[in-house]
Every structure is written in structure tokens, then in C-alpha cells.
Image (cartoon, rainbow, N blue to C red; front, top):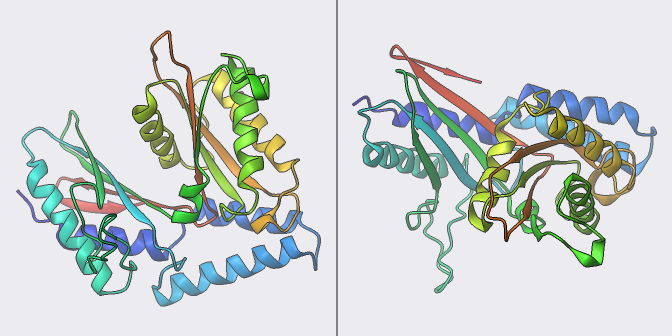
Length: 290
């Protein structure tokens, strides 16, 4: 089995220091929509300066380099045990090189491991065996501030008048955005999962964040609601970093799962403007990044 430690290290470096082109383009478009001299415009200008400096100097985009969340889709015959070891070695080396800040803290003792390695869930790695010969590893670096304002609702929700339908989903998603205010480091990106159980719904809401900003849901109803939620969230005028303005959310990404009749969960994973996600593909012995 091929040792991909150095290639995974490069994936971590790119994710931490080089914002994806679609996200940067959306931030630049948002900047032009804000009034010159406004707090919102100044915040976005500062963000874009930071994006450029981070890329040029290969330094983290944000001081909170987040929880590394890997989604690994591997061909038949690969060892997930060896893949996990390579990922962990790459994460430890990325921490040593300061692409990642040491973030793994023991919840009972409060001790920091110093290398971003903890138990079997830090870093988080999700494995899926797939057909074909290509191996893909997708990485999200999820900061603590935006993770803190994620939310899960159980419908119906009488307080919000939200029933078990897409109209109810719309109400609770907008409620989550309103409650987040500037604490999630807006402008944010919403990953929304409808259905599932409590655990699978949270996982699916994060997987939705792997999609590009210009990639709507394959489901026409969800694609329409994605666009509407983004528009209506921006009408809340929370704005960049909560300073007010026209851009609170850059995009909404939705997915749906089967559920038990007794349950109807809606889960929102809020991603900050530092939308750090990258993909590595190994095909025919060659590695590419996007």
C-alpha cells in the first residue's frame, strides 16, 4: 500500500492556508455589495487581505485552525488502519510545521496533546469503501466559533410555528442564523440536513459543506430552498462579523435523509467565512488537489 503521508500533509497545508477559489470569489462579490467605508465593507476588506497574506506566506488563514475532519473514500483492498495512521502522522507533522495550531485537549484533564492527536475521534476520519480505483480524501477544518453556533431542531417546533415540512425547515434554519448573530464569524455557509437520527443528521450536515458554492442540491425542491434561505438570511442584516450589512450567508447547502416516523430532525452546521475545504485524489499513482 502506497505511503501517502507527505501528500496528506500537503492537503492539510493547502486547506489551512489557501482558501478555495469559489469561496474567495464569493467574498469579493460580497465586498462589492457593501457600502464603501461601512463596517461590513471594512471587515470584508480585512478578510480578503488576510486570505492573500495567508496564501503568499503559507500560514493559517485563521488562528483557530479547527477540528480536522477527513472524509476518505477508498477502493477495495486498502487498509483503513494504515490510512488512519498516515493521516495522523500528517496531522502531527502539520502541527509541528505550524500549519495547524495544537487543538486537541483532553476533556477530563484539560491537557493539550500538543500534536492534534487525541483518541479515535481527533482528528475525525470517516471511511467509505467505493467502487473503482481512485482514492479521494476530502478535508474540512471546522473552527470552534462556527461549530459552537451549529444547531439541531426537532420538528414540530411550537415556539417557532414550524411543522414537519419544508416550510418548517425554513423557519428553524433562519432561527439558527438569527441566534448565531456574528458569533459564527459571518459571512457563513450553512450545511443543512433534514431527517436522519441525531448523529447521522449532524454528519450529513457537515458532508453537505463539501460541495462547492456553485453546486446546488440535485433535488429541485432543496435547490430552490437553498437559494431562498441564503437570500432571506441576508435580509436579516446581521452582516460580516455581526457588524450589519447585506451579507450574512454566502451559501446554503442542503441534503435529506430517511428518518423514523417518530422523528423529524433538522440539523444546521454553520461554517465561518474561512470555509477551509480541500480534496485530494489519487488515480493511477498520480495525486491531484482541488
